Length: 259
Image (cartoon, rainbow, N blue to C red; front, side, top):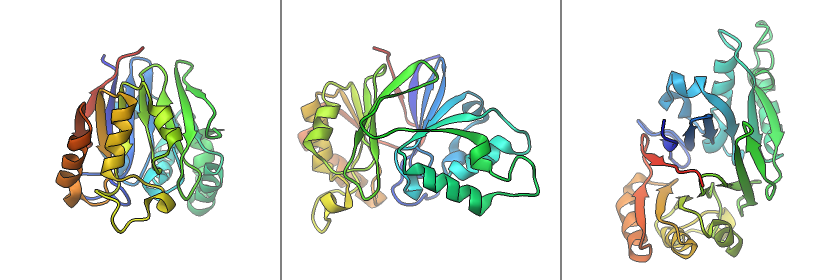
């Protein structure tokens, strides 16, 4: 089986028909890793995707990146209790998942009183630390400029970076340098009318510059705020990035090659 990163969902903010919010499945010969679990992600996953999960990574606690954790917890504990899944995320995620249990626990069912606690084994990752999933796959992290604690991740074995949400900085540029491919947000087509530093996002030109300066072979552009901006976003990126650029869409698979 080829190792691939499959786009499950890539919408910023909210899902639309056929396109969930943020969710990416790293499917490897040693098991699957779900990166982000935003609203609607579970609908686009297959039974075999769940059966082979060895870990879940959540980059930050905005709803379009973590809301379906509750749905995934329900699936793990009902109608049959499944094995506990390792869950990795910034320490601030703990408050969110504890709140989920209080809001959505079902005390009348033995396994669903605290579904998140029952379904997941939470491993807090302070942005800047490294973590390992399944004993095989290691990731570096970087704290991003975003309104909540957010971490970009870099796969050491597969040489790719997922920027998550966050503004362009020199630290991010350094973090991406040397990566084979970059999965990067480009929330806005340009900077006009958007305080992207305060809001913690990137425009298309910054996304392109990030990949170009990093020497990436492939740039996959994700997290657009408006599908109507798809064409102008990719045109802008094509003017500055000389490698291969692809627009993220559900079902897109990027082949991964271990270092």
